[in-house]
Length: 208
Image (cartoon, rainbow, N blue to C red):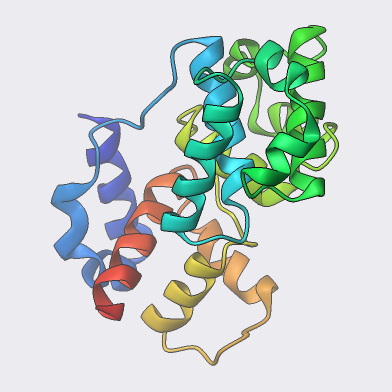
């Protein structure tokens, strides 16, 4: 049985309402979560996530392309470190995000942070190492663990899309206490990343 099949079976058992509400999106779930295979792929992905903070997809993609261009069309720790901060500002990056990109690059270049080795650590230990980098907050770390490391049991209580999707599915009032939302999400463990994918897709569909 695939991990996806196990996840869906788990949802059906522990949360039938969630299973039925998201059923139209079950077939579009990936059989397994995507994992970046090289250090450079992981690095570029982490940079993209930082850039996307508090931005819509189109704006984030535009700024990411500009940032890559000012770095010589290749995002590496070395190319980021040698690029002047003024060029990042011209590309549309804030001073805080520029500092974060530099901090990540320093840590990877100096081998304080080994992105590939994060796969071997628990979610808690991997998150701790990432959160030690200046400017990396819980949301960025959770997105990286979901979408880049392919971790199966990650949930981001700071993601507004996930919050609104849960409120919609369970007909909860807006700004329901996060403790209540986390209690719902806890039922989906150890497949909370798959549940998050279903939540995002359900919300996007209902919003159309």
